[in-house]
Length: 270
Image (cartoon, rainbow, N blue to C red; front, side, top):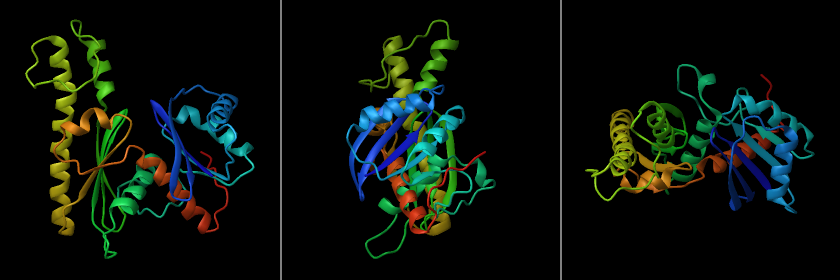
């Protein structure tokens, strides 16, 4: 089985695939100071007796990359660590391609392959809304090209900032409030954070969709993903599809493309 590992700032997603079928999926807390040995123990504990035939990984945590590279170097299976210099087949139509996070690239790949292809073989644009530590709203063209997007704070990050910087505000449970007009501090915070972020997403998606229509003459399909998508997505009016683990599907696709091109193992160095 293929092991796909998406190391995010808050959570790490690990998933196993048999072909294109996801078999298991786990979300664990990311520890930026973890060693290669600690990562190995975590992976082995989750996988148990599962036979792994390849590993595809990406990381948005620079501090964890040395340990991740060390662990991948130990493995006796083909590995692909997505980073600068590793071809994914995703054209990056941005000013500086090296600035684009590996997670955004492989998520764009999965969005195009899973949602951007019509039954007649033609392509359509896709907008991906990734609810995580940051809220990413990315545009993917009808040929699978990454066009850029918008980055905003995540819901939890915003709550932490308010609780830290505002003397009379505190951390609250993040849940959908019964109404927009909060009658107390907790309800008001929940309204501002959950419903407020739904409005932010709808506003950005509307603007990005209008630009895609102007450029390609077709309205995009909008897909939600990420660990926090369940909190906000039902309050959004612009979301058409949801796939919580779009990034690991993209890692699978990137690994398959890399191996098919004869790339072998690839663990890029800084």
